[in-house]
Structures are given as C-alpha cells and as structure tokens.
Image (cartoon, rainbow, N blue to C red):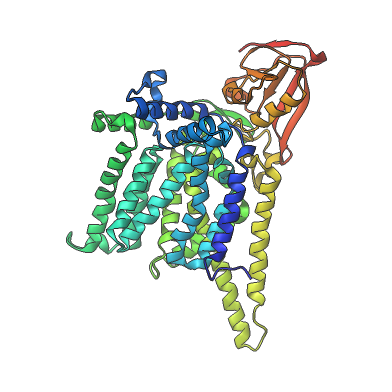
Amino acid sequence: MIPYRSNLALWLLWLVYAAIALGTLPHYGITWDEIFHYISGDMMLDYLRTGELKVEDNSNLRFYGPLIDTLGSLSQSHLHTKREWLDYDVARHLPSAILGVLIVPLVFAMTAPSHGRRAAFFAAVAMALSPHFFSYLHNDPKDTGIAFFVTACLWTASRRARGGSWLWLLGAAFMFGFGFATKLTIALVLPMLIAWFLLQTPRHWRRPITEPGLARFTELAVVLPFLGLVVGVICYPWLWENPLHRVVEVLRFFAELQWLGPVLFKGEILHTNELGYDFALTMFTIQNPLFILGLAVLGSASTLWTWRRRRRTAGQLALIGLTLFMIVAMRSPQHAHDGLREFLPILPLLSILAGVGAESIWRRARRFDLRRKNQGGRAGAGRLAASVVLAVGFVGVAWFMIALHPDQTAYFNRLVGGAKGAEGRYEIEFYCNPYKRGMAWLDERAPQTSAVIVPLNYYAARYYDTPNIRSIGDGRARYVMTIPRLHLDHIVLPPGLEVIHEIKAGGATVLTIYEFSGGRIGSYSR
C-alpha cells in the first residue's frame, strides 16, 4: 500500500526529488530574460559592496525586485568565480532551484494539519510531478521563488488566523516581504487570505470589532501587508531612498506594464492584445497533467462539500487562490503570454487540491472495504484498487517527465496530443533552454573558430561560446541555430540552409541547427 503514516515517506520523496533536481542543474541552459536578471543582481551586489547604485545601465531594472537576482549573483561570485566549484550557469541557478526544491515539503506542511498526512503526502507527490515546475526551478530566476513565497505566506498567515502564535504572523510578514522583493505577484496573497477568512467563517465579520475574528481580519488586511512592506523595503536597496514614493512608482509601473507581441495560439499567430479570456484557462488546462487536474477537480469538490462542516484550511485556500489567480489571468491574458510559466505561483495550490482528491479516492475505497467486511466479504480490495490507480497515474506522469528531460517545458497533455500534437499550434519552446546543448553539439563538430548565427536572443547562447564556436546575432557564419519561436521577431531565415541537427522533445522539435549548403559562409541581417 502507499505509505503515509509517518513522515518517513515524505523525507524519502523529498530527498529523491532534491537529488534529481539539484543533480540535473547542469542539464539546463540560460534562458530568455535571465541575462537582464543577471544585470539586476550584479547591480545590487555592487551597490551593497560600493554604495553606488548604477540604475542608468537599464532603468527599468529598478522596478523589479532584486532578492533572487542578488542571491544568484552572490552564488556565482563565490561558487564559480572565487572557488570554481560550480559552472557559471549552475551557480546562478542554485538559489532559485533550492527554493523550488523546498516547495515539496512546504506543500506537505501546509496540507497535513487540515487534511491529514495521507492527503499531504499525495499533494507532495503531485507537486514533485509537475513537469513545467520541475523544469522552471532550474532556470527561472523569478517565478520559482515567488511560488515559494506565495505558498509559505498563505501557510503561515492561515496558521495565525486559526489562532496560532504571533510568530506565525511574523513569518508571514517575512514571506510577504521576500516576495515583494522578488516579484509583485505576492500582492495577490492579500485578496486570497481576506476572501478565505470571510468565506470560511462568515460569522467572524458580523461580530463586534473587539471579538477575535475581526482582530485576526485586521492582522491579515493591515498588519501583514504593513510589516511585509517593511521587510520588502529592507531587501530592496533601490527603495531605501524615499521608500514611500518609490513603492508607489513600482506599483504604478506594474499596473501599466503590458507585454505586447505575437503569440502562437491554436495554430494562429495572435498579438497579445487579441487574446481572449479563454487563453489563460486553455494554457493552464493543456499544460498540466490530466491525471493531476482530475485529482484537483475531485479535491475541489471534496473541499466544497465539507466547507462548513470541517476546518479544511489548505483546501479552502487552494481553491480560492486558484480561482482568484485564474480570474486575474483571464481578464489580463497579455500577462499570461508565456503559458504555464506565468502560473507557477499557483501550481502548489493545484497540488494541494490534487492531494485532497487522491485522499478522497482512498477514503471511499476504505469505506468500500468496511462495507465488504461487514457483509462477510474480503476486505482490502478497494484500497488495493485505489493504490493501483494512484500509482499508475503518478508513474505515468513521471514517465513523461523523464522522456522529455530536460525539456519538460514542452509538456502538453493528451487533450492536444502531447508535445507532438501541440507543435505548430502552441508555443513548444520559447525560453532558449536548448541553446546550451546546441552550442555543445557545435563545439564538438564545427571547424575551429566557427560562428553560428542565433537570430532569436543570441545573448542567451553567448554564455556557451568557446574558442571553437561563437554565437552572433547577425552577420556572416557557417551555421544558424534557432528555436521554434521565430514569429516573435518576424524572423525569416536566409535561403540555402540545410538541417544538420535537431533536438526533439516528445516528438516535437525544440531546436534546429542549419548549415549553409556546401559548408559555405552565409550571411543574415535583421
């Protein structure tokens, strides 16, 4: 049977997950906008060392929380430059990867008090088997960290709201502050907590203000964001001078920020301002495993059914958080243009609901066994069947993750025919993760001092330049290397190219290397 009675199963799961996640860091490359986060982190690290903040190099960087970026720069400075223990990109990715790994036990800790260890174990398994999250924890400098801080803030704040020590409130404030110094998405925690508090015990807000209910509400609505902003300012050096004015500047910047560009959706290239309400919901549905989505639907139904009868805090928060986040994403699809990457903060909440759903299957199987036993039949058949169903489902998801490695961002479920079925209809690879492997392949085979044209974001490829092969954005070279997202910059490749190498994931092409026919030197200009 599936183990759940002690924490041993969790620690074994977490150790295996941590070993695989951290051990595979060298398999993943530098991605699309990491180069700007590197600049941000180096800028903040220099400021802490010298006292000079040089924001003029890229003025918009000052609006982005620098916490994870600074930790990445610090890791690179000590573990790569000084000690040479890790490669450059591995050292940069290590802090966000550690936070991503810690989410698995965090999901367990949040689920266990209200739903039991069995549901918590299933939730931890579902979190570990999230294909996109596993991939992004290796090289997403912002969203992995904000997913951790959102989940940790919800957990600690809800513990305080349930009557826990004031230390839980302090912990929630730190998580909120760290999140604010990472990405402004943390602000969505406040409506999630307020909606949960009002909906799970509506009698609280009917009482006089001196009652504990409204005192807790005041903590969530006023004290938590105030203390959190204080922590956030401390972790955000650009805010140290005139904090109030600059916090308002940050809020105004992100309120007005819109990414405008072409997106491949349902086989059409649409501008982000042409995307409809269905974009966010569609991408969330087709980029998560169907098995986990199905369990989450069962978990949502179970949470709603027991809403008033039991204190199901984790399930309630997860359901409210998912709903609110999805409403925001559907109303502003241009902010969800990268698909599931934009939904990383709520994947732990999805896993919690999946764990609750898996536990409800087990619970119904146990009731079936008890009825059989009372009727004189053989007990255990129901739980055995439930174990087989859950084990086969989870193993199936793990198999797909292994098959796609290290391109789990190309995961699409069976609703669209997997990665192969989604090719040409949705964005299969847009993050430049395969550039590292493409440059390594060229380094082994290209003539000495060769060049490769990388028309789309060659900055992510140049980190892997060697004396034998160098990447350029345009000019003259023997090779051309691309990912499928050429429509982003309306790129038209030059004629006379021959495919010499492809990297595939799930049958879909995520990177192509071309050579000019006859091995000649060709040219490309933007």
